[in-house]
Amino acid sequence: MDQRIGFNDLERAPYNEHIRSLALEWVLAELPAQRLTYSDYLTNIRILLLTTQDVDRTSQIVKAVLAQAAQLHKPSEWVEQELKFEGMVEGADRVDFLRFELQQAGTPDDALLDQYNERMTRFRP
Image 1 (cartoon, helix red, strand yellow):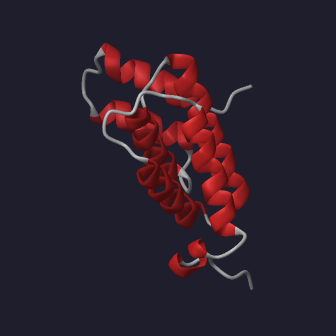
Image 2: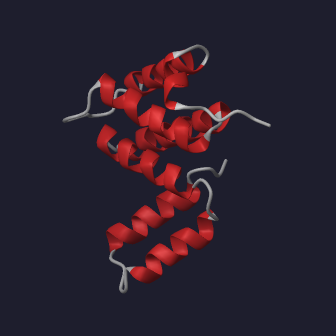
């Protein structure tokens, strides 16, 4: 039986090293961050790791979101929002979830459609 990653595990190797490495990548991305700090980056990555329960998947998500943020000139607050989103849909079917979200919005505006497209293309090569 696989052991789940717990809150206390996040402060021990190899998890703490992995979290700090991803946070450093976030810092090096040099995205605008009006209110976020390095501590916030660590917290967001820890939450994502607890959600995914997979170091490799967490790394894939963080790197994909950071790459997209740089490409689209998004701030760190956007990265924070998208990491939360990715954690939320990790166990769900991405396409079904995003279509449901659009459907619930009623008449989607351009911003919602842009967000839909960003999220749909995040993991495409």
